[in-house]
Length: 84
Image (cartoon, rainbow, N blue to C red):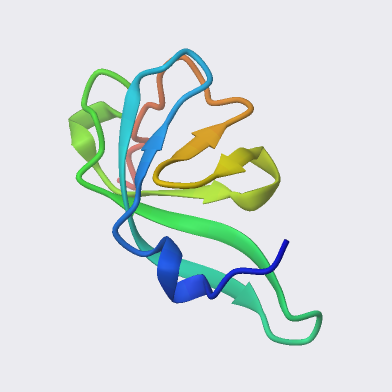
């Protein structure tokens, strides 16, 4: 199934457990292979991602795309590592 990648922007993403992760803000594309390799997610659920920071979700984790995006897997909690 082909879809215009711009149609993914703004869609809500849900974890495999049914929790809302956030909204797609950008789509990462490998221009050499012309494939989507990740979804940049903003306004993340701070119950899933520490401080609600933005995350890049590998596209291979996507189970289904429709009115929303459903993931095959997502960590129970994503911690933010300190860069100090």
